[in-house]
Amino acid sequence: MSSLVVCAYHNVGYRCIEELLRQGAHISLIFTHEDSPTEQIWFQSVRELADAHGIPWRTSDINEPENVTLLREIAPDFIFSFYYRNMIKTQVLEIPRYGALNLHGSYLPRYRGRVPVNWAIINGESETGATLHYMVEKPDAGDIVDQEKVTIAFTDTALDLFGKVTAAAVTVIGRAWPLLAAGTAPRIPMDLTAGNYCGGRKPGDGLIHWTMPAVQIYNLIRGVTHPYPGAFTHLDGKRVVIWSAWPVEGKGEPGRIISTKPLLVGTGDGLLEIRSLQMEGEQEMCADEFSKVKDARFLNR
Image 1 (tube, one colour):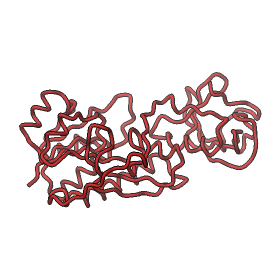
Image 2 (cartoon, one colour; image 1 turned 180 degrees about the horizontal axis):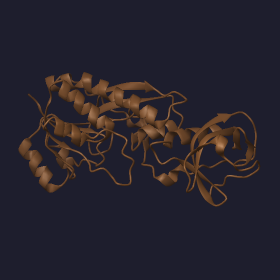
Image 3 (cartoon, helix red, strand yellow; image 1 turned 90 degrees about the horizontal axis):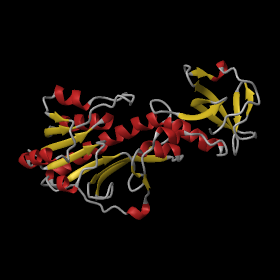
Image 4 (cartoon, rainbow, N blue to C red; image 1 turned 90 degrees about the vertical axis):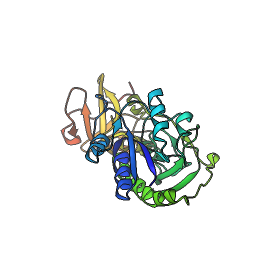
């Protein structure tokens, strides 16, 4: 029976471990993360899953010398990475007998890099996917074993899409693991020239620029809405988070409120109907509760 070491976090990590266990895989050790006190924890706990199945786990970085020594003692056949947040160094990738593989939340080579689900929504994509590939020194660049596409609806938020990508990830692992265990899994070279690479995002990247078209602002809002930090603007010197909106036809000066019922704001192309927002220091409210008058203006800062 093949021996596995798994690096995992978040729902993708939880669900993919579940699928491996369902198929009878033997997991010797799990590396995961401590939950950050500054992050909204809305996803399932890999540590709890490990405890439920009696699998030892560590939250220290897999690249630390003592962990590298332990891995060499375990001598796993495979290492898997499922939404593990640390880059795994070459000295670790060389340890497993048959290779180290990563489950990435996009249809590679598109959206290599960080937060691919959020980027796909923000950029208005109509599809993405999940990809299992071998890890090499360059991130998200190794040979592809299997991948599954998912459709992005125009109404999908990043959370909606994350659920779709998670399900696709489980499908990929379900298909690929028997082939990997049997030594018959394909290795398809990745053409990096056909894709793109995206960096991570910070809360400050959610600033709304009202000169952008309404559709682009809408995509930003749905790409970073709950449980993420949200897209924001400023009004009367206060920060305002826009949690929900919808693009509509019409014209108006960018950032200018042209109607309060419905709450319509001008953009660089079209109007944005704001449906849910949160003034600094207040609770989230429906647009109907918004008390500002017509002609007030949202500002970038």
